[in-house]
Image (cartoon, rainbow, N blue to C red; front, side, top):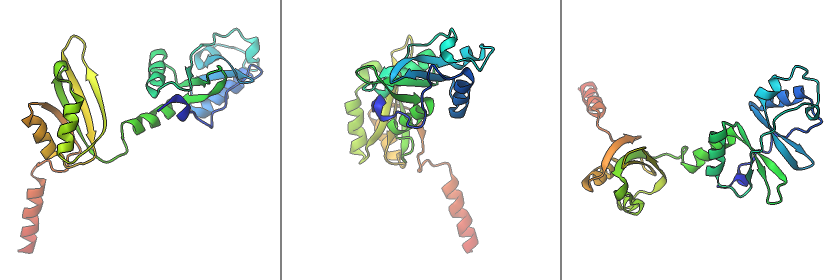
Length: 220
């Protein structure tokens, strides 16, 4: 997924002829702490709410205030991961998007990113989640996929988490079925360490047995 695919169509930029108060109102309206300044499709920089709140006269125009504009943006063909990295590194609530001619194309808010991440990781899709702990020497996604497919399942999403000063990795898988007891057993049979399992509808916690006993009692 690319930046141009998740641009918000409802958040307009501000101009240098806008007042400080207007910009603050715009930030409050869209629950953002950063807002792009754009004149005739030319991106001038990103305004911070913290800087604006230090201005005593909120009726003054942006162009008449000595503000630090942050030159932070991504191009429209940037991957979603690059947008997330910029948001995280600079602690932003929004990222401007420019086209290849450096004209302003739109804005990606932190809410847009949440929606795109939910889509990337199939958050809204039903399925079970398995967390494997493996050595980085054994990190073969192809082999992991073969095990999943042998159980007549498919991987909806996956990601790898590494640890500092460690050769261990965590591989999180989301598969397209919620009955994953057999799949978990397959991983263990291939000597994968299954660290965590979520959304498994067949985990035996004794509840089904208690329910059956209760129903038999009622039938008596």
